[in-house]
Amino acid sequence: MKIATWNLDRRNDNALDGVKTLIAEHEVLCLQEVHEDILNDVTALTEHHFIADECTYRGGQTFIVILSKHPIHNAECIDHKHWRSLRNWWRNQKEGRCFQRVDIDRDGQQWRVINAHLPLNVSPFCRMCEWARIWNQIDEDHNRNVICGDFNTFAGPIWALFFGVFMGFRLKDLFLNERNLMQKYIERSDFTNPFRKKKFTHTRTHMHVPYQLDFLLHHEKHQTKDVKRWPKRMGSDHWPLSAQIELQD
Image (cartoon, rainbow, N blue to C red; front, top):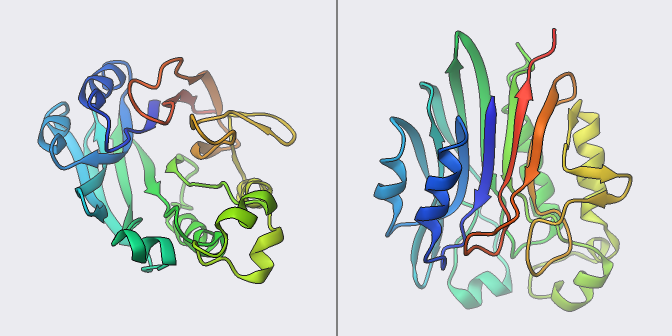
């Protein structure tokens, strides 16, 4: 299955053209920060799609969206706990309101796809709680599970010094390396991150932060081809990620 994930950036004037480019080459596309102004145009690109609320802010509303060229079943929006921080309060923003879970029927085989945009302006403890809830949605009857999205795994001691107070960090969070913790969680769940180059090295996915914030994860039993960080951001502050996941007996 050819699948891609992309955070459009709600301020991106070229977002719709970027979505058209990606869906032309992929069977499934997981999107974050789809602004309400282009939502109808985005969902019109495929027969099958699923929409869920993502964020409200002073400038409007954004959504997370799954576009699919195959039928979607058992679509569900799972609410996040509403985490608050000084920064969210100051910006009058409610972010990361839910994540999506769908089953996709591809040539008689069922794939479970999860699309999430975890909140940025909270402590890593809050995101860890949401990771656990996401992994609880894995279909254990088979290993055709894919987890996509923007997980905002940026927290580390240096960032904590600058942003910890505003984002609600606890004292123990100040010394936490969220990226290493995320990798351990992935490995413990028998998943793999094809964009991990080597130990302690990841593919950068954001123009301002030198880390991997966006993920496309699959069961370690399967192989991937055409693993790709797209060369252009197409107006976003995130690079799209894509891969072809091949089933292994």
